Image (cartoon, rainbow, N blue to C red; front, side):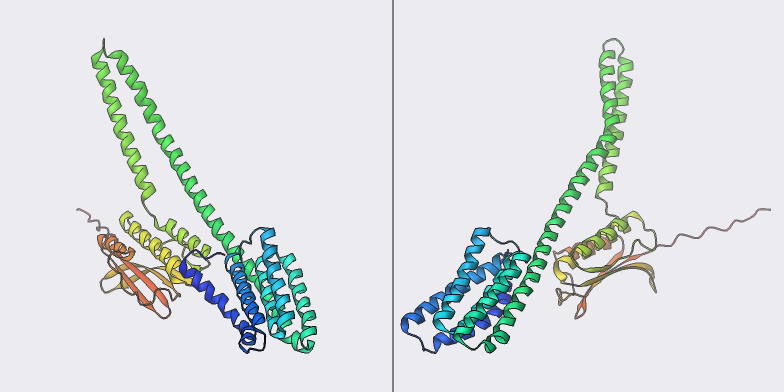
Length: 385
């Protein structure tokens, strides 16, 4: 997968750069000064070209390889350099075949990569028989070439699966948005179709009655006003219903979001008690923001969402607790002015709720509490005499 940001580029470069430590053998061979000046210069140039092509292949084309002709050309270039440098400069350069094997595993399809890795290892062994003892080649380089190449086939498969999953999630989100737009259009059509048809009919009727029967036309106009006002009320109610967040919907959405992000989620199906609309909406927004933050910032492997009734000295509360085990937000225990947590705290204050956050070594915990107002007891019946 090609890095999309500078941070991703440096992270991948560091991960790939660790394997460049095996280049110590050819670099040491050049620094020893055992070769002629021309051979040394050509060796440095060949090594620089080899490393550049190798990094380009592994860093940019692990998930999606370039065109077949370009890919074969680049891999052929690496193999040719490895053969030429090994034959001309000696056994320290045989390690280049390990990088050729890794490049094949990182860019070729599985079936083709298998044959390419085996051929590369066999070629390295044959050349090694001419420049050094075979017993030193097989355990020292042939096994890393095989293991490194086949390991990269697995890494490539995982990265490609991750890219496909990300694209599938984007497609699902787009389809869900399209479905929501169609549903809203369908509901608004059903809601307004009758009212607008009635308004049109009464407008035409009022127009025909106006010259000769103004009183009847006025009644039709009054009916038009009443129908239009009711239609406006219905539209506002429908729109507010679409905008209002509900706790069951957000619980299901949090579970889906966390699972799609590869985070094991423990989420209840519903709240233990029924809540008034304002309190339920406030908790729903808290849950949505908390789940989004877990996916974006936590780096967690597991997240637990709990809804429990809590009896305290101050009364009965419904507590929402979202806890993850990620290290991503250590040190951010308190909300910072202007961010999402401050907005959530303001929402909860409107319904007499509180928001608490805690960041520690074992992850980040967000807690929201809303007071549950008990229903007043029924008055006892007093029998009269």
